[in-house]
Image (cartoon, rainbow, N blue to C red; front, side, top):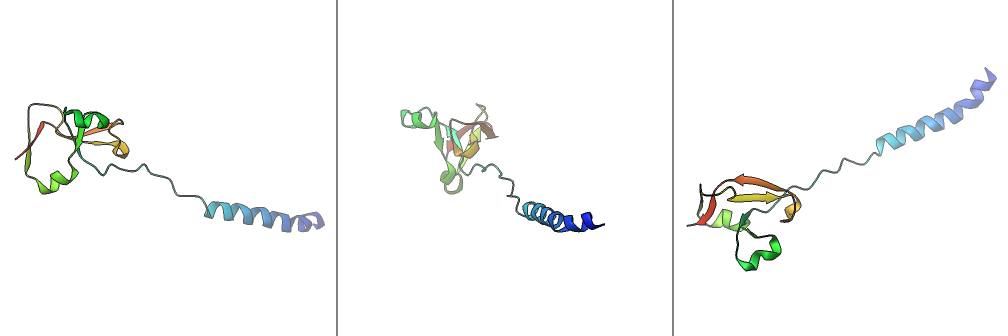
Length: 97
């Protein structure tokens, strides 16, 4: 019994440290979602954005339609990087009215 009672402070310290570490686990980092909407545009001004033009504000302020003649009308990119992974939001060709 004497040897167990001598180990109790050490066991308490180990238990306390374990509990403290468990309570301070950093939150899981989630990947930032896209905040911009893009459309394909072959104009030379958009070569730096992989041939895509940002239409985030137009989507709200300008009337437009997506006709059915192509695969990409509106797209998003992971982390808003037009050289990254693409997600197609709407098919067709972007046409501002």
